Length: 74
Image 1 (tube, one colour):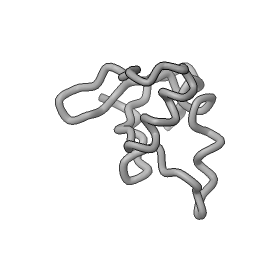
Image 2 (image 1 turned 90 degrees about the horizontal axis):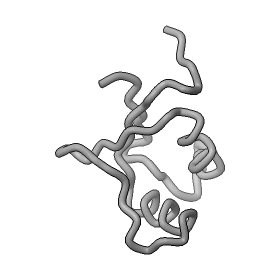
Image 3 (image 1 turned 180 degrees about the vertical axis):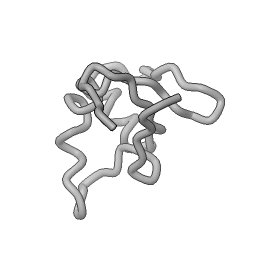
């Protein structure tokens, strides 16, 4: 499988991930569009830019995504 940085991926944000996103946009009410199961869609490069610094496993300071999962297709 080949993944391009411009491909769309889906994640479910944890409360900490949502807080980080709101701080980034400096908007305490910011909420990304999500489906009924809580998945939101992002271009991979945007997701990496916003959350990459938080994803230093195994000792991540914050887990921005539920179960550390990124869905590659819809």
